[in-house]
Length: 160
Figure 1 (spheres, one colour):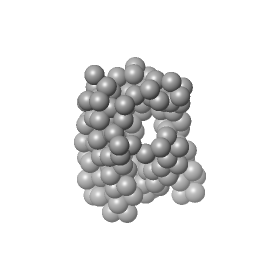
Figure 2 (cartoon, helix red, strand yellow):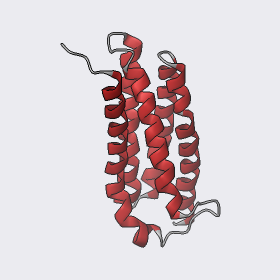
Figure 3 (cartoon, rainbow, N blue to C red):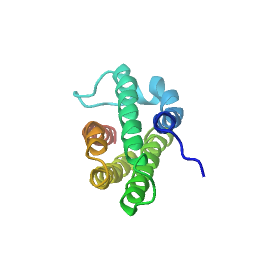
Figure 4 (cartoon, helix red, strand yellow):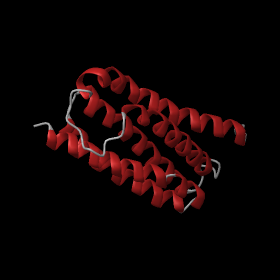
C-alpha cells in the first residue's frame, strides 16, 4: 500500500481543519447580522471581524499539528490515540457552532464549549507523547477557546 508524501499529508491535514471551520461557519455566518448582533455581549467581546482571521490562523495551526502527528504513522497506539482525540475535538468544534449559532442556544454552547476545552487539553497531552511541536501548536487554540468560553458564558448570562 502506497503511503502519502509529507507535502500531501500537510495539505490534507490543513484542508481537513479548514473544512471543519467552513462547516462551522455554515451555522455561524447567517446568524451574525441578526440574532448575534442583537445579543448583549461582554465588554471584552472583540468586533465581529476579528473572529474570521483568528479562527483561520487557528485552523491552519491545527492542521500543521495534525500533520506532525499523522506523519509519525498510525502503527503506534499513542499516535492513534492522539489522532482520535484530534478528531473528537474537531467534531466538538463544529458542534459548538451548531448549538450556539444554529440552535441559538448560549446555554448549550457554554456547556458544549467546556467539553471542547477538555477535549483540546486531552489532544494536547496525547499529542505531546507523539510530537512536542504538534502539542505546542495547539496551545493558541486552547487559549482562544478559553476566551471563547468566557464570551459564551457572558452571552448566556447577559441574555436571559
